[in-house]
Length: 240
Image (cartoon, one colour):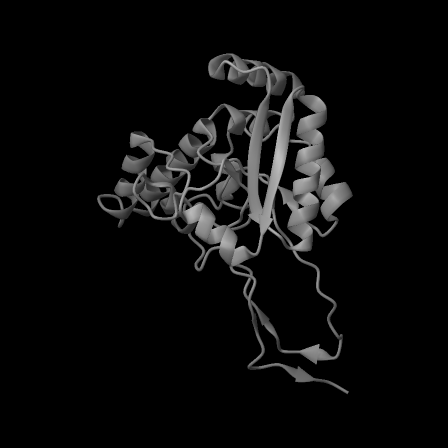
């Protein structure tokens, strides 16, 4: 997990990535659950803001170098080659090139090899655990933090990195069972789970994706699902 720590602590020129590379309205992630996705049932506070753990998505090149030296010492190596698995769409390629450049320029002896391939092939390889680091994304089907967090329980088939944390597992279990009918306690379970995931870096969030579409101003009645990004044209019509 040393290399994940390097990305977490250094590759958080996330704002540079968003401003200079993506330029599409994406924002820096506060955690794995996105901003403006779920609200505290009691206070209305945004989940991402309430669950944010300081220092987990912040830029710190000094710490990156520190962890990198620890990684080399731990592995008994003077340099390191990491294979970075990703899809091969244009936007992802640009992001991967940015990651390669930033990390290799900052960390001496580190080489990032890009393993870009069609999305279905990337998913198959990721599911098989055949990767060093996997750059991928997730979108939910319903507006509840559990739709993001549950995949990181120890035996979830989506947990391709095989990260395990007993406290995290228990928090998710409690939210689904003993606290399922108590909205306040369930919310606390999920906040706790997100904080554990962020602190332990079970996954390293980089950005909350956004897309830009060119829409004819005469097109009305299109229903946009902000949760999964799908469009519904059943009620769409054109005005004169």
